[in-house]
Amino acid sequence: MSPLNVLQVFGLLKMPIIGLGTWQINGKDLEISLEAALEAGYRSIDTATFYQNEDVIGRVVKRWIDAGKLKRDDLYIVTKLPPSLMRPEDVEPCLRSSLEKLQVDYVDLYLVHVPFAFRNVSGQMVPITEKGRIDMDKSTDHIAIWKMMEKMVDKKMTKDIGLSNFNISQIERVLSHARIPPVNLQVELHVFNQQNKLVNYCRKHNISVTSYSTFASPGCKGIAVIPKSKDPERVKSNFDIFDFVLDDDEMKELNDLDADPPIRVLDMTMFPGIKEHPEYPW
Ligand SMILES: NC(=O)c1ccc[n+]([C@@H]2O[C@H](COP(=O)([O-])OP(=O)(O)OC[C@H]3O[C@@H](n4cnc5c(N)ncnc54)[C@H](OP(=O)(O)O)[C@@H]3O)[C@@H](O)[C@H]2O)c1
View 1 (cartoon, rainbow, N blue to C red):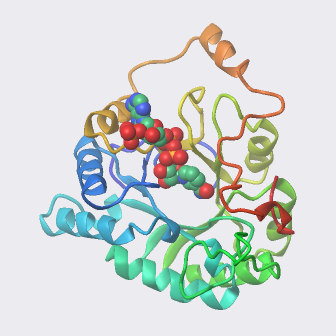
View 2: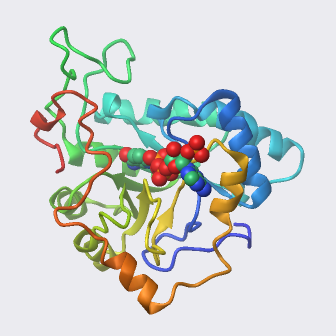
C-alpha cells in the first residue's frame, strides 16, 4: 500500500481513508476523473457491478500498471454484489465477471451492495414489472449469501468482505453466523445523518465504516470517504484535506447539524415499491 495513503484508524480493516467514488460516472468522464485522482495520489477506487463502469476502471488501472506507474498492490479496489444477483449461486460468477472487467486477479473489498434483492430478469440491473414496480425477489437469505462471500475470500478473489446499507439487526444476523466477519460497512453518512448509533455499533464489533454521499461531513474521524466528481479540479481539491484541523467549536457546529429524524439523501425509493421488501433496511 502506498505511503501516500492515510489508513483507517479503527476496525480490523486497514484501508485508505479517502477513495474515488464512481457512481453515475462512466466513459470518458470517468477516465478523466480517475486519471486526475491517480495523479493527485488517490489509491482507493469505489465501484460496483450496479454502476456498470468496472470496464472503464479496468482500462485506466491497466494503463497505469503497464506504464510502470503503479503496482496492483498499491491500489485498493472495492466493488459490490448488485441487488439483481443477491442469491448465493450468483455471487461467484458475479465477482468473476467484475474481476475480468477490472482486469485484476482480486479486489481488496467485496461488499453486499444492499440487503434487498431484485429478480434477475435477462440481466437487467433494475427489473420493472408491468405495473411499474420493482421486480423483487423476497426470498433473500443473508446467511446463505454471506457463506458464498466467505468462499470468495477462501478463493482469494477478494481480500476482505463487507456490507452496505445494512441496518444493525441485519448486521447482527450476519455476524452471528459468520466464519469471516464483515470488516467494513458502507452507508450514507454526512452532517445531517451522522449515524452515531450505527457507527458506535460498528466500532464495538471492529467493523470499519465508509461514508457515501459524504459532502459536508464533519471531518469523519476514523471513517473513510469516497467523494465522486467528474471535474478533475474538484477531484484534486477533494483530496487536499490533510493540511487543516477543525477546532472544537467548528466540530460542535458540524455535530449539531445532525438531524432528527435524519435527513437521508438515498432511501432507495428510486426503486418503486422497494419498501415492501422484507429486508428494506430503514
Ligand atoms: N453503497 C451504496 O449504496 C452507495 C450509494 C451511493 C454512493 N455510493 C458511493 O459513494 C460515492 C459518493 O457518493 P455520491 O456520488 O452519491 O455523492 P458525493 O460524492 O457525496 O457527491 C457527488 C456530487 O458532489 C459534486 N462534487 C464533488 N466534488 C465537489 C466539490 N469539490 N465542490 C462542489 N461539488 C462537488 C459532484 O459533482 P461533479 O461530478 O459535477 O463534480 C456530484 O454531483 C459514489 O460515487 C459511490 O462510489 C455508494
